[in-house]
Length: 156
Image (tube, rainbow, N blue to C red; front, side):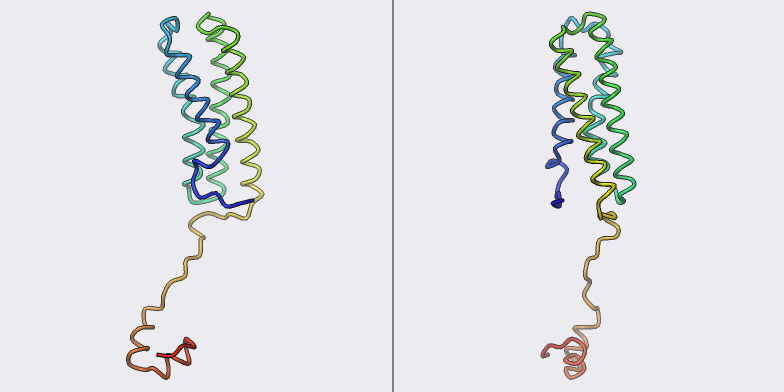
């Protein structure tokens, strides 16, 4: 699996973003009169992309997977809320079906990605090996060039 440098490159994040924008579009309608449902749907729709991002920026593989599953659950919450929105007549059947498709695809992509993360070798950012320079190297180089050459294999 290729190394992903930023969360914006993740397909599951892109789909979660699409879902959030879809929910904002359908709830930004005068016929959507239930303001509590509107607020809850908007909050829940933002959560999948936010949790993918949070997991990506967390330090461990386990935290990443946990955040992904929370995001997947929130996509399921949006799916359930779409039923209420349709039942109450706030969205028509075509938007309802479109929303169900988006939530399903978002959930499947997050699930698939979480399985890759669980099976991967990425242990987390806190285990990333960053080579550090020897703080004494410059002093040895300046005051003991022969020792420097033996230790570091370079000419002083």
